[in-house]
Image (cartoon, rainbow, N blue to C red; front, side, top):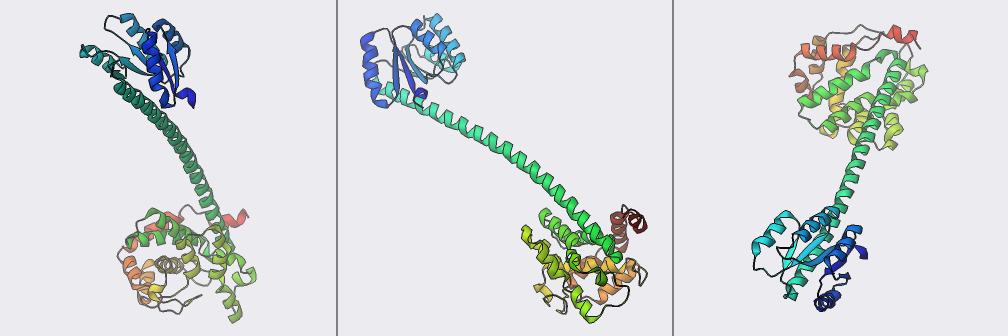
Length: 363
């Protein structure tokens, strides 16, 4: 760091030069001397590790001024303090405006010279610190952009994996093929109607909806695919899937909205649901939203034991269960949008899904 604080005193008068060197020696800087400008210019143009130069200049020394301009171009960080009697201020101002010199001081005013030298070193130090922080900022910005790209890539992989997982689960559960994608879209629309606008929250609701039945992975096929009615014991096992699903993925730093939908999507507004028998506002809002979306898709979807019903029938059934199965506010949000729009959402969500028979053919 010492070579960054190197001062070159350029003065033909040895007595003045030595006097200046002694006076400035208490500043904890490296001081070198040059008895002629030609000697100094060789030093300044062969090494750019000087921080500051003190030089006497007069207007008639045009060659010196031209050479100083070259020295500045070679080492832009070099500070130059001109020692001159200020009887012709326009000359000094012109050199300052051109950036050839940085400070002007009377050669007889030691206090002014000390101040000019100190200020130039402080300025150079601040410039170096600023450059250091700018480099650090650029590096951090570059790293941030890489991290954003990496996070985006991971998010895309996560989403693809999530959708593939739920598609596989939907195929396993013959009755609910395509169900997760539909209820995810319904849930997001209902959330927006209920003035949930935060993009992250909406995306978490989507993810929770896609993952809501992940616990069924732990339910045996003998129960999940049983053609007839379930026994009370089998039904109790089915009712474990919210807790099983929550347990399966809680170790991956599960966000609140996702976990709430997985764990509480079978709670009922009147408190008769499972697994916690939560009631009304004690049920997280995202789970209350999902409960209606889940029912809407179930009513309007085909099941082996019954045909799908239309959206008008679904609306009546949802309204009939307002305050018991469903949150009245969520029912009101659902009813605020026309059935044509709900049907369009279903069509747009499921039109890209291949037929179930096509999927079976390729398994």
